[in-house]
Amino acid sequence: MKRYVASQLLAWKDSSRRKPLVLRGARQVGKTWLVENVLAGTFNRFVKIDLEKRRDLHPYFDGSLEPQTLLKYLELAAGRIVPGETLLFFDEIQACPRAIMALRYFYEQLPDLHVVAAGSLLEFAFGEISVPVGRLQYLHVHPMTFYEYLLALGKEPAAEHSLSLPEKVPEPIQSTILDELRNYFFVGGMPEAVKSYRDTESMLSAFQVQSEIIESYRDDFAKYKPRTDPACLDAVFLNAAKKIGEQIKYTRLDEGHSGQMNRKAFDLLVKAKILNKIPSCDPSGLPLGATANPKKFKASVLDIGLLQRICQVPAPLEMQKNNLLAMYRGKLAEQFVAQELIAWHTSELFYWSRDARGSSAEVDYLAVKNGMIYPIEVKSGSSGTLRSLHLFLDKYPHCPRGIVLYSDTYSHLSDQKLLFLPLYCAAIVGDRRPGIL
Image (cartoon, rainbow, N blue to C red; front, side, top):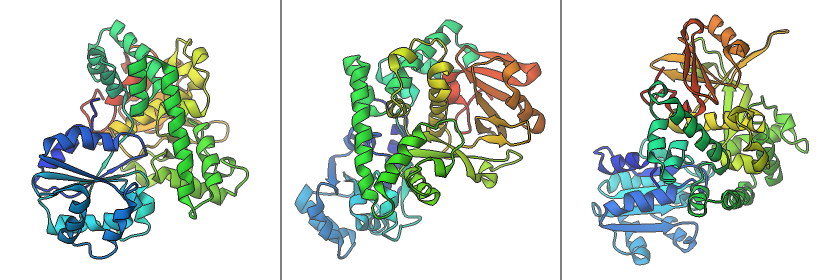
């Protein structure tokens, strides 16, 4: 499978400013696969040490963290480790927090050795140690994007068209890509689920994988003790997933626990990259985060495939709907756009909301491109029904135009400052790629 972050991994390997690299992301998004299948083959030797399985090696990190001392022990367990020739990979490094501390000394005293670490609950290990600030590099790994999903299925032309400017793509091709997106809504981007669907051509097979991943996450909640109640984490996880697209109140996430306990559970799930917090903000200027309201927010889940499994969306019924925005009351479409924006563009996502007596308004997401702010609506209606978007553009005239992501082909209403794009174009909206804004 081709992954977007593969080029970043290879660039790290050859960088003159290289530091030990820590891959971050939720469990089973493909961190270990990337190291083993993209990076390892570019070295003469590859040494992998899984610190969750090899707890017998933890005592080596209890004493001196000098790299040369540690390598003497590690070589006995894993074989020769030669700077410049060997890739040393610490998998599940969160299981041994002092191994994270040791990374700074590899950077300071053995810079020629390529060291990579991966872990899924790193924030909790960071709470037990002094984090080596400035001596590590981080790379976030997300579930497979829609583009990567198409590549995995061998549909390279559709994948390339999905990242092309839509006005240059024939309408029949745009419609074909939207049909492919319908399947992605249910298969999602967890690599094992995509592989299972590709190999079996059965969505039921992908659903089974998704159910197993969800259960593994819920089993992990026991590891959060004593930081919070695992039962509270479980309830908050499930209920937040069911509220995609809605403003969230902590007290309503789990009535069996206090709002404060629910907030703590929600924040832990955000740190673990299982949930994403999307605050409301004032788009008068940049950065958007400067005006974020921590008490007024929405959420998205790690992956759209996991979302539909958590919510038990009736796939046979929903897939019959022609309009992607009508599927599961529009929640799948909103989740998809959030997931794509986070993967392609930004780790922090925001939306706009105005509460006024008799005239509340909300715009689903905000994107930044070349220092300009663009409101994004995920809607199925015509321009006449986009009241909130028109209110936004009137209130913030410095924003050049509004973007509507919908279940149809490209259209441009210049007199209304509106650009209508096929839903899959979420990938080319934002601040890290050349786009159409």
